[in-house]
Length: 491
Image 1 (cartoon, rainbow, N blue to C red):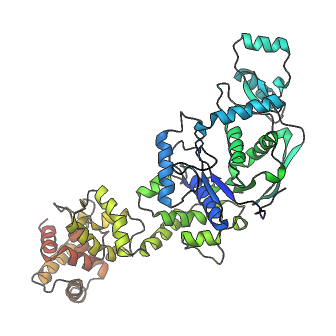
Image 2: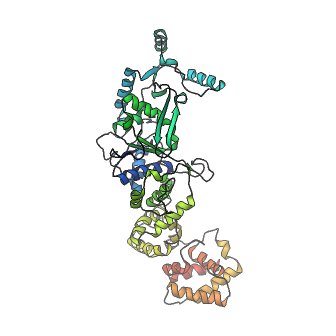
Image 3: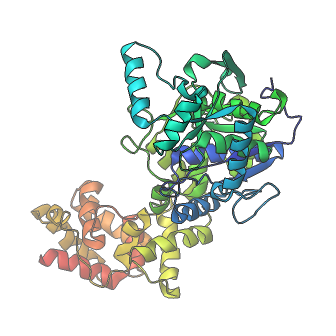
């Protein structure tokens, strides 16, 4: 039985999603681990699309999956847009291959036609439930008399193809969980091909893994129970045990409520994170830490470091917990690590999408000047629009929720004093602005900085959330700053 240390064959791993929607956290962590393992071992990363369910897996979702992997930097060696020796890499283009193998299994007696109706199968399940027997197919059609076969055909029944499970058990070594055994009493004969001739997952995935010479299968723990079925298909294909792929089932990702991560308790598509300004390198960094550790409490790693450090042996078997705050912290660290040119390149699309700028050279020059003063303060790129919109609005208005905060007598007195001491100030820069306001508001009026500067911030930027106040006023200029302050007084 091969083990996780068996690297006698060139490593070939695959990421094989069935994109019925945008790829999510669990999908991408699997893809990341497969990619990292391939790059660490000098192996091949295969990207395969499981799209036999054409009603749910649309061309749009397939295109989105391809785009997501590209955005994350998870480049594949074989797959869509690249091709490869063992293609095609869309299962919908491999239906003839699955049909051929299904017929081979029928011819060899490894599989058989099953004519049971859904009503009959449900009746069996109910009887098993009442008898406290493990539910599963009872093997009724393993042997069909000629008379029954004729009757089934005359009734117009269309059969499925079932794999015949032998007595006994299946044992394999999982690289993360060690030796795993499944008693075949709990793995009944399973369907390979639907009545309409379309293949099921268990047939297609096993055939593809063999024909694409996949050596290692890294995938989610939820697919652990399908492994004995896949091994049964390998056996029927004539594959020796030494040539089976080596399995590694990744731990579940849990939400903060200790339930398996889902949309209800935190999981959303990778597209959601992308739209909200998370960097691809931050997403990969964080997802790598969900169930794997580079050691020495290292948390901030680059993609290059991940490929150097990743081994299956360091993947934990216990569930990992998704923590949005930690992802935001890592994302903030990655943002702070960007140089100005790269930060400008990445934030500009958000500012244009939000209608803050149109992208003119003059606007970009202002943005480039402003970015250094907010780079330390933002956790996502999407926050830049909120931070900088005060610089570009044609008609400035204070946020209605913020306006009451500067209408009290003390705030009004602060604004009056601010307008007084800043009128005619030269040079107009953040150093001189700060010196004037500290002298007038802190020393003369005896106010605490939070009280003194809070009112000015809202008057000038429209919100209590903004870049540093004095730098903001320098960027805004004396005329616009004083106009806004005086307008807040008049109101």
